[in-house]
Image (cartoon, rainbow, N blue to C red):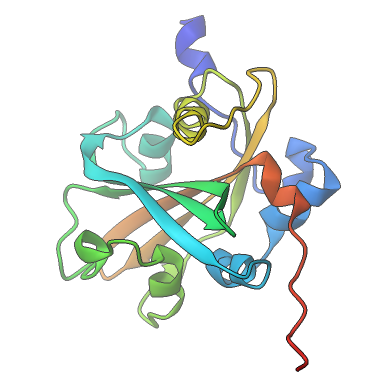
Length: 196
């Protein structure tokens, strides 16, 4: 039972509840498109697709969708990279009941940003942001660490990762995006316009 509880996160509606360092809290609460904000902090921005496949949704996600128990979903995981440095691990799930009419571009995104698609579609309704501290035992913390390890980078097991999530609705479909902010995001600085 204890192992099961460690695999869940406590999600909060206010960022102060997770006690994130100031440099990370600014990223957690930023409104609008995260993609647009990251692009403003990098000469080169890239979406690196780690995988997109059917998978069981996590217990955290089942609760967000209002399901009594986890079910299968479509899952997409990417690293968002600024100047080739991974700064965000993003995990998106869509219930298997969703149709192509609900999310017409989801299956064909490739390396395009999901955020750009969501914020550019007037039919998409965005829910409130929720915030969490992810322990090393949480599945998304483990996946983020594994993705970085595959890039020759490492995050110490004792380091807490901070995440936010948001539920989107379009027609009758729902989609949940969880963004895990990696430590290097705190070091990003806005790029100054070229004045030549």
